[in-house]
Image 1 (cartoon, helix red, strand yellow):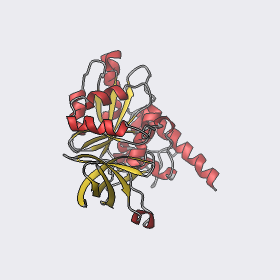
Image 2 (tube, one colour; image 1 turned 180 degrees about the vertical axis):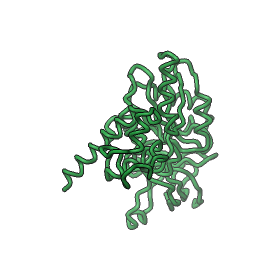
Image 3 (spheres, one colour; image 1 turned 90 degrees about the horizontal axis):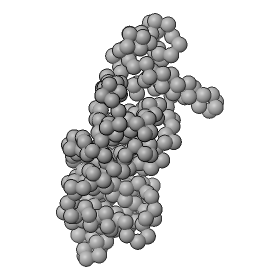
Image 4 (tube, one colour; image 1 turned 90 degrees about the vertical axis):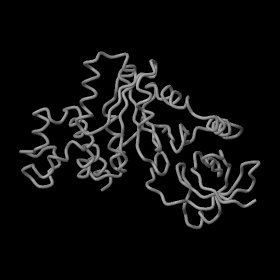
Length: 298
């Protein structure tokens, strides 16, 4: 049987690619040799055309990779629409430096980030307002949720709808609980998908897209805590802080990097409380880190 279909790769492991075709389910596919010749490897998240070998066994070949919108290296995934970064309000306390690292990484890729502070039931309103304000004032969308009390789930679901979202966050913040709640209302078809993917030899922890609705996918990112700002010139860093944008060109010196220079508009904004001191402190710390990396390179 040779029938052409379009779908999305939701998992890739040991040369097998699991392709989700809306309305038909999951097909286990191999990639055709042509990709090797083109030095192109199919990625989780790729939209592909597949040739069906057996409809009964749900097997096929990946025949073509459709044009990618973007591709991340770590995790290796394509066509990401947005990132949902989850931290806990308490237990563990939020590591703002790690959060800012992640936001910079996504800014580099031009992928919008939504910040989710989970376990809101563990904090006082005043503390929640403060967290919310830090990042809202930078132009980020911020959600306050409680997986424990199932608060804010419908809000997340609305934001995810029709998109491929990378989910990230350190361990212990309630990522799995939130993901499970989001998957609860998923149709029977998705249940079948999960069963097929968990079966047999494919149990290793690899990048995988979870289907949480029609054309709505979540991708969990393993190894988040070791995130490192790299592949960037130190002078570039300031452009990945959205709240700096309105002060660009208003400093005394052209090309001001907002660290040691006098009469710097960004530093003045920090002093007057328009830019949050915590964010600026992390900025200086990352700047010094990139400077050290540069020294080691030359």
